[in-house]
Image (cartoon, rainbow, N blue to C red; front, side, top):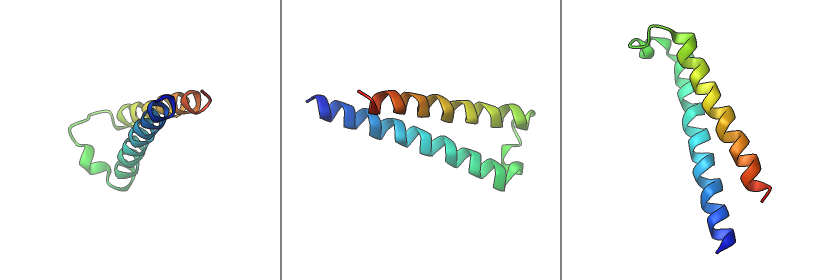
Length: 64
């Protein structure tokens, strides 16, 4: 059961990382798509923070 929980957590975190990295890629390739956000860099930094946060959590989870 321990390994199943750990695997589920790792997969979930990796999915979140992939999601936010894709958001960053879309923002870089088509910044016009973020028209409803008046501060593009703030929105971009927010996505970077999410990636960093989930990558940190993933490192901890994998170390358990």
